[in-house]
Amino acid sequence: MLRAPRRRAATVLWLAIATRTMAAGPTVSLPELRSLLASGRARLFDVRSREEAAAGTIPGALNIPVSELENALQMGPAAFQALYSAEKPKLDDENLVFFCQMGRRGLQATQLAQSLGYRGARNYAGAYREWSEKAE
Image (cartoon, rainbow, N blue to C red):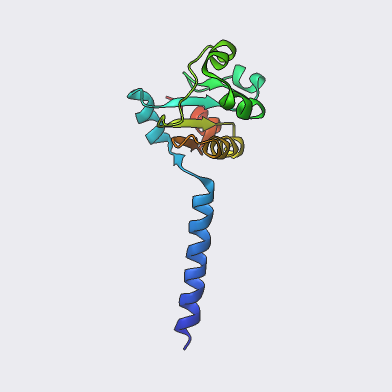
């Protein structure tokens, strides 16, 4: 009789962890990010402030502060190109990787992009902090 409550508690705990993980959205690890970058299969978006990005960023990242991201992703391609000097991502692009300093704004940006239909939006959960600590 003691087993049933334990199983139920374990199931509830597992469901809570699974739900939290799914709510966090798809993520990219440091080794995976390095592999994607080396193969040219990722587009990086630094969603920190312009000042933070100017102090250092992951090479090749496009800086769009999270406060501007919703408007940026809803712009037409020509307006996006004019403002950011880069091609606007397409809804079906894979590996649109968002990052910030610690992970929270990157997660927010990923969830926002997904809500706008960007299926390939992912969060680099290690964020710039991990990148800068482990840069080669």
